[in-house]
Length: 112
Image (cartoon, rainbow, N blue to C red; front, side, top):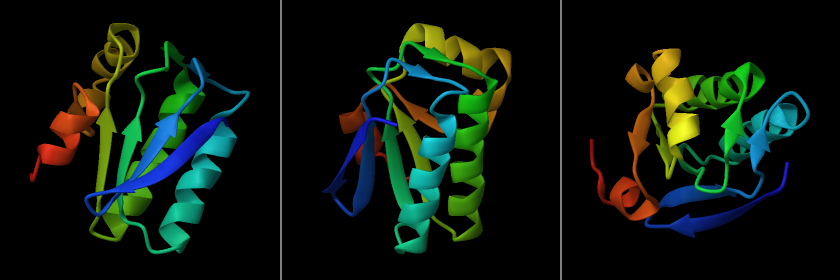
């Protein structure tokens, strides 16, 4: 999984640099979430503005990260979803589970 990590305002911001999150790289994403949580990072923003496609395994990796962060009473936020990706969240009704914001600035400014 090609991604970079930065700390902004107390959040670990994981910038996903792949155009696809699918069966080929979703395990790597899941592992990144587990590593962050093991290091004590429980407030995570996943920046998805470069992602143009996500399949069920990609959704599963995000759900796994969300579940593990929620278990630690943290926040797991998605930011910058393109319409094609957002449609997948709506189709599967996962938009009711995830905090989803239009961009990183909006996500970091939220205090839900």
